[in-house]
Length: 229
Length: 229
Image (cartoon, rainbow over all chains, first blue to last red):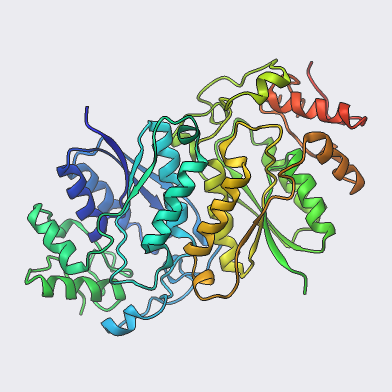
């Protein structure tokens, strides 16, 4: 029987590459997607198609309302910044930071993993491009892993030890795209833009678009995404 | 200006006593209640009335669907055990354990605290009666506090240091009830039962009822709760 894992799937470039990688390693994947008051539903639709494409064991889309708390451009409180260069993106924590988002995502993943009897949780964070996001750093991932092994019945009863796996942690966008291409990922399925048009056209100017375009360019690959500019 | 905090409010005996305590200390309280696929909505209604009674700064009720994951009597997967004595309750982790529940609750509380600019989070856990619940132990609370101080922009930018406060940690039910009575808590507002009737009558036989009744008895106080048996 294949090993089971829970994988956080947003429908973006990173988590899709991660899914391809984990599938290729032979895991039975339980994919978890959040509808959390993002600006658009398109991300969810992409995640569904991607989960289907990779024939995951189960895909759960769960709704949480982070708009109640506010404090982020991604939940509609501030404008998404456009036209920033790589240097500006690498500096400080952007307004697209959502308070405690990865902590919330990982805690749901932990609940599901425990209920399934799975002990591995995969998350597509990478510290290189967004050094500013506090909950994408290796020390954060280690702290959550320590917490998981105190928080749960499964850990206390020594049924196993939870591992939070972030294999893309030290990868830049270029390396992630190279890995994905070696695994045959169709990046036309993915959506990275923070502010896409209703037809799926990416804005081309937000931080996520900028990093994605630079990644494809550095990898010498064609980005199938259509951009507005 | 009073210090702000976020407080997890279930509408039960512990979190209501905690709210009375924190209010008396002069905090501006932001109370957070979860609708999480419990067996009954009554808990939510009680939490609303209690929040109103204590004139909290803000009360947010947020919905999360823990039924998706299963694995607990409190979300309807198994029968709530009845008629267990104190010794049986103290032993092992009961089926009313909900996978990673406090981790999910605290991660939402952290998101809200960060958005508010508050750094104190209050939770009514106590390790004495339920030694079996892994996410009620002091080492778990410390691990979440460490995580909070890595996870957030507020912590990275040194705006403050998050504290997870569990002042009832070392209290038994008797002491909690004594504290609440000294603060004038009307325990008729609270509901502890895991399996109440629609009119709010408590079953009198689940672990929560058993612990509550013993607590009132030991405190030499009258429990205003109506019990079916």
